[in-house]
Length: 220
Image 1 (cartoon, one colour):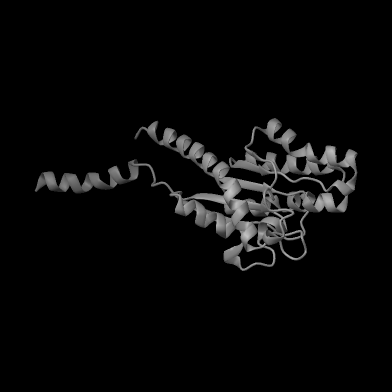
Image 2 (image 1 turned 180 degrees about the vertical axis):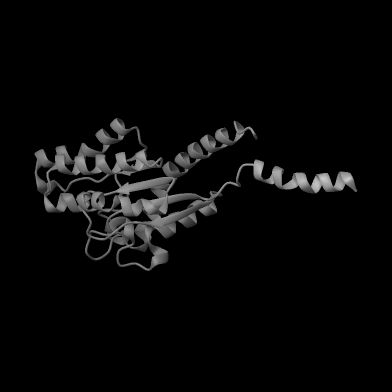
């Protein structure tokens, strides 16, 4: 009886000494209409389709839709603090299409994206940067300056980089809406198929770091 009483007294101490069970990794999709699910059912939008893909591949995640149709990089910077209230572990940053369409100077877009990435990293979250390409009609000088924004930032900030968010989708009528600017449901599936491997490699890296931290845990 004395041994049993000591055992029951010790159990709460053991419980509190163990590290908390791993929680799902929180992913925030942060961008404009291309990643918000513009004119689609919620279940057809990029965040929902990405979540289904990751869950099917065995990743324990939550995916939050922090994208707003019509946003420029400046709009994203203005609301980054609010978006980070989701406390994400990983943020997929996807801005620039509206900057390009509005003729925003590439230097301004670069500065806004750099600030967004810096703030996210300061909050302890990882970043994947999704790139955009300029339309040829903006002229060769603008095209070069704009297209160089993303690889330059990815190198400077040491973040994983997906060169063109609409890769394999833009210009394909079967994957685009009638406006020829936004992906339809099939286009979103194609985007997810393209970027998923990069997201999963990043999640594996994050999980390995999380495991390393737990393995170094020493109860007091």
